[in-house]
Image 1 (spheres, one colour):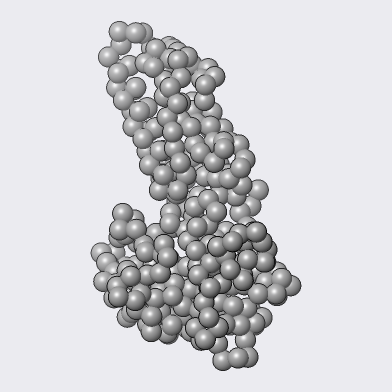
Image 2 (cartoon, rainbow, N blue to C red):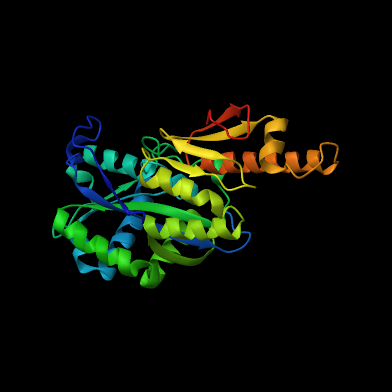
Length: 311
């Protein structure tokens, strides 16, 4: 099942202001691929600089699909790691949507012929709401400036379909936008392109495949796409994992139960047994760390036998 790059803002959400109408949003990001060894001097921008970048992004997006200029564009002048965008409920984009709903119309930078362009930058060294990038995830080679588009449903659908179909192939940012982002953030950009969250998720799935943790992706995809769903990872020699009720439960086996499930062919006094158990535990911790980085709650469930009925 594909991951759609849009969200529903519940009409009954009392914190989402006037934008809480159930309209879909197109969720995406400006992806900045950094040169090796490049570190960003500025994790976020002051308000005026954020508005400059927003205007450049609006110009680019309208160039990919003309009707995009009819939609309201919201960005934050900050860059993030992919794991900060790919989280259940899309909390970073949802926060942008909520803040935009409360922004007076005078805060837009549109010219009256199209949708508003709303940029959130730092005031007094702080970004509004919960938009501050996590220092824990700073320093990666791919940094993402999130944006969202909203407006009339028929226009959103048209633009969203076009972006989903074409943006990954021809979504290179304008040279002026790439240079502006490089200058404002104080980094060296090798490539700058636009992505929908669907595109970003596909890139992350490929990255995890190359990193040897492809087995975990179906669980992450379920958490992102339908947090209320259920998904099992039951594929020895991988850890046993059950995603349900919005959390991932990892089976914590006793040594005897682990041996019965994963190493029944190894003699109990074999020196390899302890080493294999240690590697298995390291794999569990790796999976827990990846899930946690994506905002998926993780619990370890003690299981007394190999069947793990308590998971």
